[in-house]
Image (cartoon, rainbow, N blue to C red; front, side, top):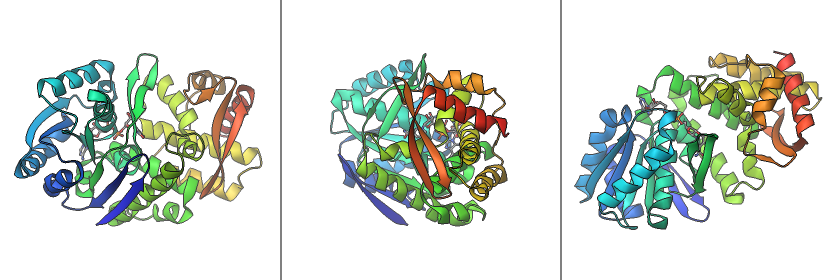
Length: 352
Ligand SMILES: NC(=O)c1ccc[n+]([C@@H]2O[C@H](COP(=O)([O-])OP(=O)(O)OC[C@H]3O[C@@H](n4cnc5c(N)ncnc54)[C@H](O)[C@@H]3O)[C@@H](O)[C@H]2O)c1
């Protein structure tokens, strides 16, 4: 078991280990207190793990109420957000009670935004059950829902009081969901840690605790320095500008991780053709993406991708922040004009 402490606007522990689900009540009581625990989950995770979490919470004297959404990105919507707030009110929750997100990034983002909004902020604990949520979305305090105009357009920075990651729960993930998480782990390796990157050639479940722990440490270090994404935190968007664009172009038929993987591949090729990234690093990135069964090609024209990028919320006026790999373990942040962005995309897609 390992514990990573994050000190930002709120300080909290991220605990990673085995058997934490059945001890969640103890940890949550200590970190968040309260009388009522509202467990938010989805209709796949709830039947698998909800009962054990409830039993553990009840064992610590919590009155447990449960809200289940349909699995999938479409549930991260304004309608579920309002329903959840009404559910908290009907359950007579106060600000000192606790919202417990049991699930992947969809559950965590929705429950977190509701926790941030209910009575201007209630206690909040994340129990990530996907690899993506474990290494990324449960840590750092970004919460959001999607609007009709795009993903994550309404949300808040709201740090949890605790993150409990029982990695045994990841064993029931589908191959697709696991791959989505691996795309984010590859991202961490490219932006910050070549040793972590190298580990990904060996079986992931043999070293799952180390992998999650290292990703969380990297995220912790950057979030402590730049909680609200004014600078260094933008590095986590490696592959995401193009990734979000092709996710959108696919009508969200392409999963987030697969889209991000293709976005990283585009940036690796573009950086190489611009003389920023050597052939060897470009090849290592492309090979690692392919090794894990993820896409290295987009299937769209540069112009289609570029137009879809213009909706990116990271765009400010006539420029956009791009994360460009210099080698495995190090990326550069570049503020580029929209014309320069098109140039990057052309170079990255042409070489596919
Ligand atoms: N807040 C952040 O910083 C941040 C960062 C990255 C991504 N995100 C968001 O995260 C979301 C994607 O998260 P995700 O990839 O976890 O998707 P998800 O929450 O939709 O989970 C993927 C699928 O796996 C199932 N599942 C979850 N845990 C399981 C388990 N242990 N066993 C079996 N099935 C399980 C879910 O029911 C779902 O069908 C997106 O909405 C994205 O915008 C947020």
